[in-house]
Length: 195
Image (tube, rainbow, N blue to C red):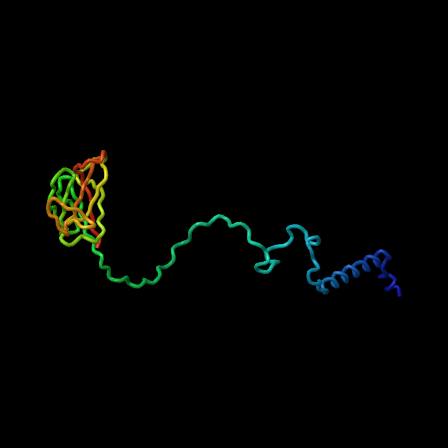
C-alpha cells in the first residue's frame, strides 16, 4: 500500500492529464468527421493559405500571360512534302548596259536595235504576247542614281504592245529608260519575260 501511496498523482497532475485527454479526443473526433460539402467559405479560409494543389484543374481562372522564355533547340526535320507539279512558266531575263550591250542573261536574248536615246528593242527568241514583262533600273556599268521610270512591253502592236520602229514582231520587247525629268535617256536595266 505504501507503493500506491508513493505514485498517487497530485490534483494538478489529474487536471492536466484530463485536459490532455479531452484535447486529444476532440482533435481525433474532428479529424474523423468529414466536413459537409460547401461548408467552408472565404470567411473561414485564411488569406494565402491555399495552394494551387488544393484546387482541381480548371477551378482557378488563368492570370495574364507572362513573358516568353528563351527559344528551345530546333527539333528534328519533318518529312519532305509531296513534289510540286512541273511548272510550265519559263523565265527569260537580261541585264542590259546603258549602251545596249547585254551584261548577263538567261539565254537566247539579243539586242535587235537601239534606235534612239533611252530606247532598246530586244529579241527574246519566242513569242512574248500574253506574258508578263517586267523591267527595272540596273547598275551594269551605270552608276547614275538620278533616273526615272523604266517601261517595257511587247512589239507587234495589238492590244498589248506597240508598233516598234524596227523588229516589229511578237518576239521582240520594247524597253524605254528615262532620266529624272521623265525624258528618254540611256540607263542600264533589267528585263524579264515570265512564261
